[in-house]
Amino acid sequence: MDKKKILVLGGAGFLGSHVVDALIKNNYNVIIYDIKKSKWINKKCKFYKGNILNLKKLEVLLKKVDVVYNFAGISDLTDAYKNPIKTINLNILIHAKIIELCIKNKINRYIYASSIYALSDNGSFYKCSKQAAENYLIEYNKKEKINYTILRFGSLYGPRSNYNNGLYKIIFDFIKNDRLSYFGSSKAIRNYIYVKDAAKICVEIIKENYKNKIIQITGKKSIQINQIMKKLSKLLKNKKKIEYKNLNNLNHYEKNPFTYKLDYGLKCFLKKEQKIDKCITELYNFIKNDMKVKNENQK
Ligand SMILES: NC(=O)c1ccc[n+]([C@@H]2O[C@H](COP(=O)([O-])OP(=O)(O)OC[C@H]3O[C@@H](n4cnc5c(N)ncnc54)[C@H](O)[C@@H]3O)[C@@H](O)[C@H]2O)c1
Image (cartoon, rainbow, N blue to C red; front, side, top):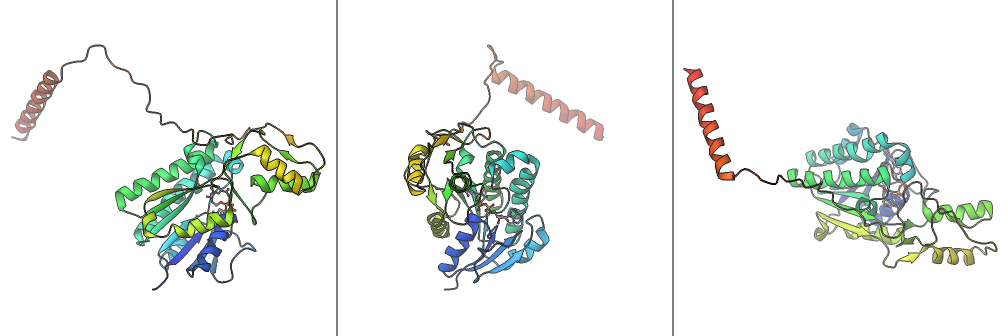
């Protein structure tokens, strides 16, 4: 059977490049579209350098594929916090324009990289963009029947990550400063998932039964940060006290990211409302009169 052709937006990045490797391992034909070339790009795929803002260039590639993964855009909380408008543009507006191009070009499935922050009150503008991006995708599905899968990733770790990544930062800073420190609280809890495991799930979800579903991709086990820090301390042969800076100016979640409450607004009622029968009769009379006036004006 002919394997599906796949376009990976942001396929040169941390997560995207691992997903590309996993797709190629499963014999898919893969094309990457990314603003920058990285050394992680798999030699068995085609790489096109470009910005997702360039929709004309993107559409040429969309015509060649069946499935699109979108890992491109603002992926970091700090970056989103510093650049809210850019985040709206790349993570929401361009995402919606890409969905419309996918509809136009009859793409079989649009797979979107969201985050568990989409279900959280934490995460500032990054969270806002993920919530909005998910909502737009679901509404496009209702309106235009575009098939989607939303992947809500938790804390990923592994090779090819960078200084924006939690565990990378801790280890990098230790190597540089000989200090083992965590920006937040020792009691923070994470369900870390190794990026290559996450990538395997990203391939699995191409199957039909994951169509139009939201999938949570996190590690099975919850682990407290102080446990992770103790493990790192042993591994890195750290002799000094572990530091917890208890800073959280960017609103990272501490224990449970799933804190999002639907806000329906306040309910406000009149003590005594008009009776509906009377009001409908009044409306009926108004419409009849309105029609009569319009008819007379037409004579
Ligand atoms: N890494 C995580 O822990 C994690 C957790 C939850 C969700 N996610 C989501 O997964 C996706 C990928 O995350 P990542 O950690 O691999 O990030 P990353 O920054 O390593 O990868 C993003 C890739 O997109 C490319 N890109 C950015 N802007 C672009 C543009 N305008 N045009 C074309 N390409 C562009 C970058 O060059 C990069 O290669 C993001 O949407 C992120 O929000 C990641």
